Amino acid sequence: MAYRINKMDDLMEVHVWDEVSVTDVLTILGQLHAMAPLKEISDLWMLSEGCMIPWDEFSTVAKGIKNLVAKDAVARPSAVVAANQFHRAQLELFLHEARELPYEIGIFSERDEAVNWLQAKSR
Image 1: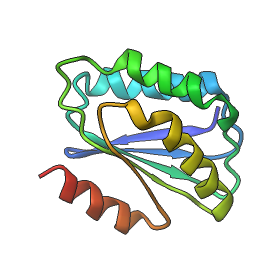
Image 2: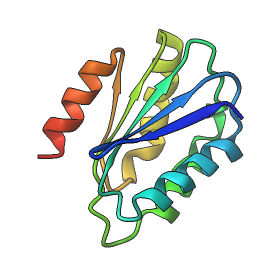
Image 3: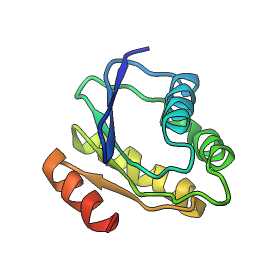
Image 4: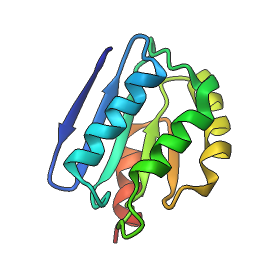
């Protein structure tokens, strides 16, 4: 499992590289939930060029998120920075599965663009 979570005052940044299983993604989501149970802090996922996430398990990931997010959650938005067009296409498919989540997810090519979007959405 190749990832790192950096918790800041107003953002949790998740860096993912190499191959990550669905179990790993759910573990990361569980750790984010433990750090901010009401999702009161936005999260930013940074996918490296070599990141291989089994996005064929979209529904499992979406269900895992739904199970973690409390009904009284603040539910700040999430953003994902895709390292390449392939990741971006996969993430667009994931958004289709995640459409019923209680918060918005944005897909970006650059970290600064994602951070600016998160800040604007969190006001």
